[in-house]
Image 1 (spheres, rainbow, N blue to C red):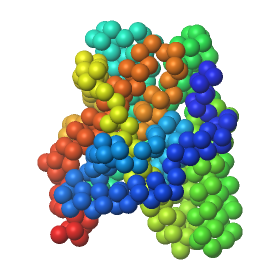
Image 2 (image 1 turned 30 degrees about the vertical axis):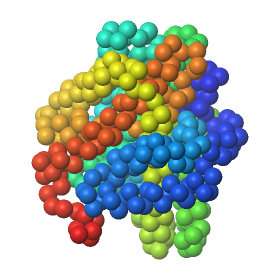
Image 3 (image 1 turned 180 degrees about the vertical axis):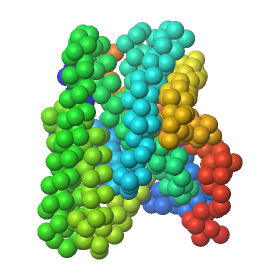
Image 4 (image 1 turned 60 degrees about the vertical axis):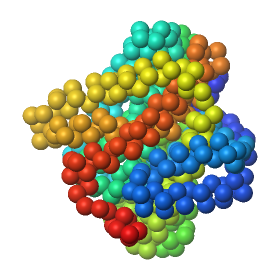
Length: 424
């Protein structure tokens, strides 16, 4: 999915790079960060604040106090270690029966919506800030997708189970793959040369189709093998191999690892519920992946907070301010026209939900991983990375903090959640 003209974020060479990145996360540092995350979770839920927002603030505080120094958020750490379990866990819990009627809307938002959002953002950054087209187009591509990590964590925290959750979660999962593919194609055009329309289309189909095929193969094989045992520990092990294996195999063949893991998770989650995985195993698998997602979420948002605190956003005040505006305009240009196209169908999206989809389209880990993978020769590279982190910070802190208010006003959180009630 992400082999980038020698820069490479594909699976070739991943083992060595994973070891290099993960050396920064020693056991002692992981224990410290998880301890802090546990306290942040308790405090955030008692104050009825988004957990992820609290983690980002905690990460910034740790960096300011020079605690856990030496821990660094890198592109390979995000892609190889963090994204597979987060995408897999989210896909594992998506019901195909509920998703299937929404596929027309979700597909349009995750494909055409990404192109529209990327185009609007790129044009805005080129003309309003003066970035060269290469930097503007790459920034538009990397920031276009809503991030499943941020979106899913927010809805889980407030126990939202309406159609809105299905739309935003599934869109954020699928558009990760689209945005990654668009980013690869744009980067290849910038660094190597503009390919023909036929090459672009062929590459897009291969990356997407190859990712889905790898997910189907790995997910199917996992179900066949897991069905031969009733040992829930073995079944958990097989799903772990499927989550990372589907990602790495797809990346090895330069297909979409995100789509591969997503497909494997959907397949295992839905067929596994129908008896392919034992009843005890299903409960154990869901509990294991819920905890794994909590751990990875905790680490990634604390690390995001630590990295953001080291950047001097004020040095690029105008580009940062413009980017925050054009990213929201790009999101609006994608959501409202696409939803309007389905206004006379049985999958129409209410205007209230459209507004919530606009503001709830949070950015996060994927955008940062793509930004960190930019080649050193790219004009405005440091500025692009800094602005990307600023947009993510705005997304998580401002949109993340206010989104629960809008959800309550819309009746999506009509009563206090069980988690909140438990902490009174």
